[in-house]
Length: 105
Image (tube, rainbow, N blue to C red):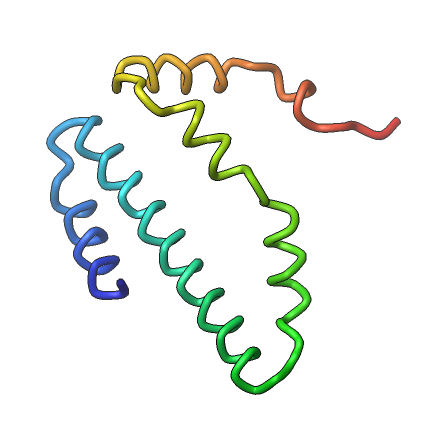
């Protein structure tokens, strides 16, 4: 995975012909980084099991907090065309920030 990440990084630096190419390689980098993080998390959990230890608290808390999000996103995007995904992206980018973040007075 680390080698793949380096290849993606190289393509991102070299393949800047269009905005679509740039966005593609940036998206590939996000997916690769996520996969690397998931692999490291699984490795840490496996090591804890082999040693008979409790899994690291932060990994368990993260897993509990994100439960179902992947499935929900997959469900939302499944069957959409690239144009529809871009339209959704534009809509989300134009939602006022105050709708997402709580402000203190």
